[in-house]
Length: 369
Image 1 (spheres, rainbow, N blue to C red):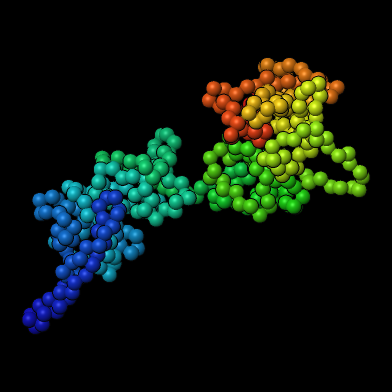
Image 2 (image 1 turned 180 degrees about the vertical axis):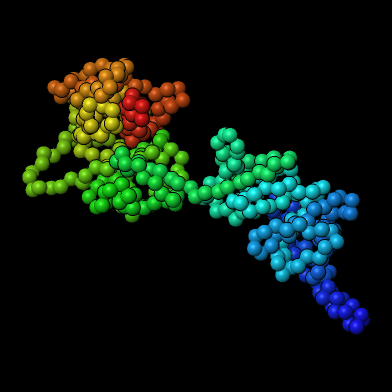
């Protein structure tokens, strides 16, 4: 009987097998073993550790649990063939969404916590703290876990926000179709609107209703809507085109649905843009915007801008550096705003489009937007 049991044991342990081994970086590599019933010590040795290096072995089971494997304890490979082997005198404990994890290192990174907990990349990760707000954890963060306490990590679904014509919407996914964003904000017929996306530091961009918006984009601000013009059959006066602007400028203005003209007056070249929307905080909701376009544009820069009717803040606050300029018999309000040293005009890059981004920023700044 003893001989039969010994023969069975020898047969059970004689089959070669391959496992996956990683350090605390969780970068796994294949390791071949001479047995299919390896002990923790055999796994440590096959991973390159000597007997005096105090290797600690964890089995990462198929149910995503981590289990200590003592040096003389046999591993049950049916529960998982991934092992974490690290030099350590013991483990420190953390919890990930309530599940206990023993970790053989004095620190753990946010990326490792995500991997150990199976946390999706779009979910937010936090370290729970007592008597102060939980700490947001990114992949590169290194969290010390030595000591008597247990560091507790929790994840939750990320929520992205977007302003659609002043209505704040939220999304549990990082991308949203423009038409769906409008629907969330209460605008049912996306086809009735010119949809414009504003991202800080970038020119406005017109969207189709089917375009996807990446809510993770740095500086993403809002969507503005303008009703599409309806032709009621009446004849409309053709816009003046006294001089040409760059094709990129005219295409941009047309795509945004602006009514615009170029006029020559008193030796000056003016670009006039009708119904230019301004943010809340002003007594007017839209103005006629004028830009003085130099004869040698784009080699020469566009500077300042002009609006009619004059803009005034609803709270009565003063707007600095304003003057007046008569254009076509109408007195426009001059906004004396100039580019700083870090944003010098570059004729290869700058144009009406980029100047309009500065115009929008300057107008929004005065009402704290």
